[in-house]
Amino acid sequence: MIEVKGLSKAYGELEALREVSFSIERGEIVGFLGPNGAGKSTTMKILTGYLPQSAGSVSVDGKDIGEDSLSVRARIGYLPESTPLYTEMLVYDYLAYVAQIRAITKSEIHDRILETTRLCGLEERLGQEIGTLSKGYRQRVGLAQALLHRPDILILDEPTSGLDPNQIVEIRNLIKSLGEERTIILSTHNLPEVMATCNRMLIVHNGALVADGTPAELQAREEENPRVRLVVRGATGDDIDKLRDLEGVEAVDAGVTVEDGATAFEVSAVRGRDARPALLELVSNQGWELVEIHRLVLDLEGIFRKLTKDV
Image (cartoon, rainbow, N blue to C red; front, side, top):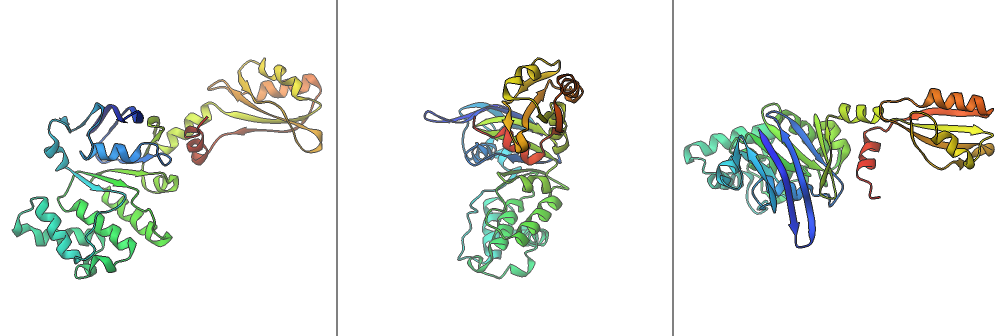
């Protein structure tokens, strides 16, 4: 449904995006994840037609956003990080104003507002001034304006930013229910947000795409290249070459002295190999005392930190 190829964006000498490519199928809820300044909001603004790209292409069902911008944008609902609400207006009046901008016919506006506010849990707030609403309800108004024209695609940029825990749960549940009939892209730096809401993750760092897959797929890839923590007595940091020479071992971090004079090593295996049998054999042959040996497989938080760490 959405096809992004070689997307790049530069602000003078600053490269905000560098040849980002991905595709999203109809009905997916995709988390676009990365630390602050990674290029998330820039990507969202390009996808919605708010910003032009420096290079690359974006298409929706084969329609290029640069060549057929109005047609593509008509299929997208967008909730930016800072929702542009007119706080002095009533909720109903604001949504009626947005409906006119979206070219919804006058005869449809009332029913469309009722339909959308029912979906977003706003029915009882229609006569309330936006400025008097809690932040959670303001986010619901922002979602409602993004949904009024019944878009196929919903793009949400940090939709739970600044909300309290109860409001966060409410908005997450709302997003999941909306995803039953729409394609949703959720841009955030919050990993728990993605884990609770999305069925696929795109991770960006320094303007580049560094991972693409379901949470299970990302963890499976990590398990294919496991690290092992080995703690022994009788070995020193000078014995590191014996570990590095083992078949199936890719790298070994320098030994660190830990409690009771033992030495700890972190060993990275060749992808798809388990280094533990060879390590145990070496320990036995060298006469070292084994204190500890276990795999260091990262959880999703660890994977995210690993992928987005500046070296």
